[in-house]
Image (cartoon, rainbow, N blue to C red; front, side, top):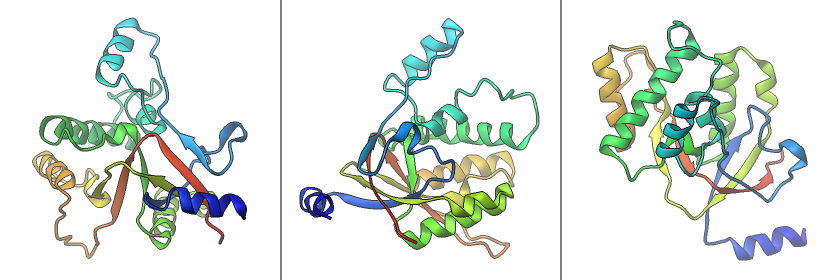
Length: 205
């Protein structure tokens, strides 16, 4: 209790968000609440790839960045859900670098929600998408930051559209805008928080 009192006084001027630890990766190696999650140093074995990655992202990558930018186990020639997701991620990143360089990279950020209820909703959506009921049990944690975040419509980051519309969607995403969904769907705001960030306490459920 004393730790939480000190924390609330010291960091009350920071912004608080909420993230679902769907991959159970936030607290590997015995790390506990009130810790810093930072960027990782992922170095490809091929020297030319290592040099290029260091040139583009010298600060490092998030775990999402590793999976979506430098995952040597996924080949782009294979037309799978995973390879499509990687290509979409690259399109959004290239649009960001070209037109919205002040925005945090999806490859160097932690994904969060504004409210606990939204983090729970995201957890359910992800469990349905991946057909994995274990995700429904994922813990939700506070995320505290003083840095500028980006709010984008997660529903825009999908491939169910022509390539020109995907290009347009990327611009809308980084502009903080959205589109009317014909199938009755609704926008879902995800918050990109540039790393490093402070992980707060686990949200009791």
